[in-house]
Image (cartoon, rainbow, N blue to C red; front, side):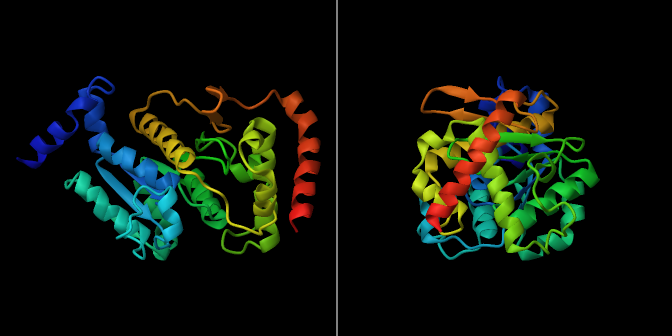
Length: 294
């Protein structure tokens, strides 16, 4: 079977969800995914099966046993392998004609070119410095970014070049600091800002052990993750990436939304007046959680 014949057969059941012309656009698109583990990996898998033509993958970590609970490219035989390289190899088992470029820690040296060459960026990293570098570069290059909150509920948001970046919108104390010069205090404060937003604008607090969440906020334990939440988030990100490539309307804006599978509803950001009333209450509660866990 020729390469073109393979691709057409492989993607034939996409037609109807997308047109043949749109499938052709997907086949020529480049997506840069930074962070190929949890939600980034799930997003990658969906994009590959949707027929994206080229992926650029960056990750500095290796798969570990604890990744097996949620990361779709982590298997018993990929533990110990570099995440981006293992992800590339498994993606090529889905579509051997896929073009994949892989970067490790050196991706930061090439970020200007990587962002400029991509049709859309997906932020799958949980490192604040890497995220700041991506957002700042995306704004400079005029590229859209797809992201999600550190939340117990699946979420997604889309930041276009003229939209406020998360560090502006969530008021991180990082605006005048280089991405590679962040202090521990700045990282902790930024995480608190994001946690505050999640608690104000979603019902996430009802679906997680708050005593353990306090330990996460206090930096005492790693962030909790659960396969249904992580993989659903990756699927939402893939949808938005495809919208960006095809130029079709996004489902999310720069504030995003939360999907509550427990109650069967979408949770949009609250009215600003309601949020203003809730914010100091949530802030005090987060401080109490942190203090109790310290």
